[in-house]
Length: 148
Image 1 (tube, rainbow, N blue to C red):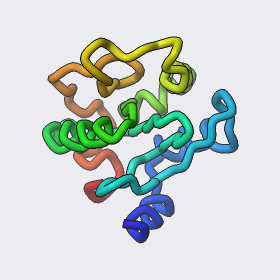
Image 2: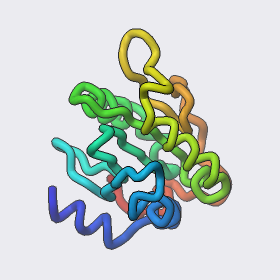
Image 3: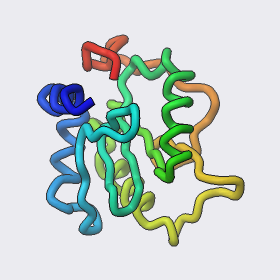
Image 4: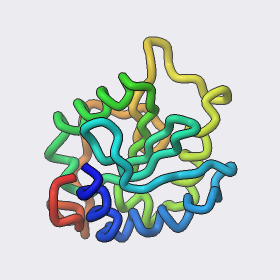
């Protein structure tokens, strides 16, 4: 798993690179993030271990792997993490909104989870069952070239 994480750190997508520039060095509320970090059987895009918040940046491939993403999120939540998801295009075109949504997720006492447990969110909002199709300019693999 460590080898896969190292490989992913060496080949970030444009959106991952842009977000890393914003969250590294404790730039959001003094919270430390790690990138491409192994947690159990998965490698997550970004994680703040001190607040148990995972930030995932999804490319177009996630529009077709809804079941896998759902299972992955359920497992991560079952071990105590809150998962926040953004589309690549959101990170690239709405970076300030993405940073604000991440900031909100880091302060759970201000934004408690809905009753019945934690929910995976996309862009800071509760996710819906349907996942939109990739947006123009995103390839089937979201520019990553391999399944994560």
